[in-house]
Length: 525
Image (tube, rainbow, N blue to C red; front, side, top):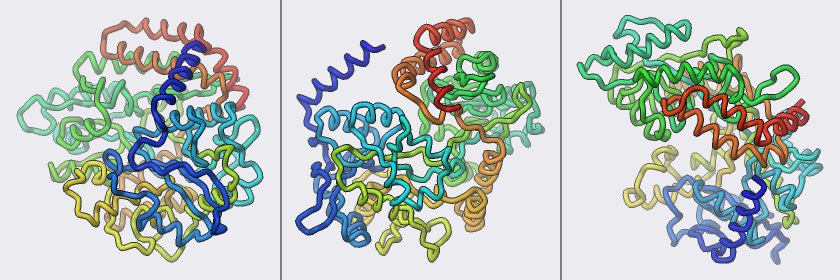
């Protein structure tokens, strides 16, 4: 694996020689942090856009009504924005870093934080963090702050990320249950019977065999409640087993979950497209009434999927599905931690105080506005910060062809470029979050199932045992997870026997697995 890493580094250097970091459309030129001739503190920031494709060539990301917000609200700071599409972010970061010409501030993952800190690319913000970023520091706990620390230093600038702001959930078609005279299942055997009936007993009454009991996205993601009913979670989730943090994908309970899902797939209950479907394709099937049980985010379900489903079928109803108690008797739901999104400050940045002032301003609360639009980041997102703008939904922005947008709407799209993923619901405590959600329900903005998902996740949510990772994790886990995805898909789809799971466990230990366990156990104890 070390040889693979060396090859990738050489390839990156080669690409950097033949590709310049600033050729992509929509990007600002890296200026470096400094005090300008006008006396302003200056820094550059790389951020992502929700726009479909690159920004139009005639758009200056640093000279429009959205960029003017910062010039007005932060008159002593000059921000140079570099905007890329989310799909291009990693490539752009690698090119910039490979060339040594990178911006002062960049979004980063935990793995990138470790790598960039070791490479001397980002600097820690230990003292400044507590002094200049009080709005977020007052919200996060010390446990939350561990997510942005490495080797005892604070490298990441957290942006709010309340774990309950948009929880994952699964639901069943309640109208299908009623049509078939069935009740909500009480155990895994009854769930099999319900999903079988959803597949083979014409739950929508159209006289055709055109439904499936269950579906997910690529490699069986988003089937959270099934895995949690066995006490495990699909993906890179670790749980305490005795005095060690062990990945769920090597535990015996995961083997049992795979056997259960293999039976559903073999019996034709799981839509075969689950092997290859992305989120949008799955949602399309749900809206068209093809799937009876599915997992998604509470926000997507309550504000978009359910309304679209009911436009297609006014009788469509859904009911929240709570996982069954796991073998240890506990109920588990997937959840994250607060403050998991972060930005890094490069070692070239000399205006760290200005950077922190900007982030602090982004999440400053304004109690004069509606309770769910009361952060500056929200007001940028919704176009209400003294700007004449019609709010546009993110999904609409992504899907609407640019040639069908009015000139005003096209300009409005650019506000998505200037978010730092902050939001009111991300920066409040649980009780206030529930009040905000109820207000949105009362106003008819979302369905009540959103609040149900938040309350259940608050009660039963189990975060990944790994809050902090180290260089060993970063070195080995990508290859391990790639092989895991291949293994679980091949077993459930029937191309390999269940003994392939045992082969994977041996692969894990033969490829640095115990070293990973030892490292995360010590770092997260």
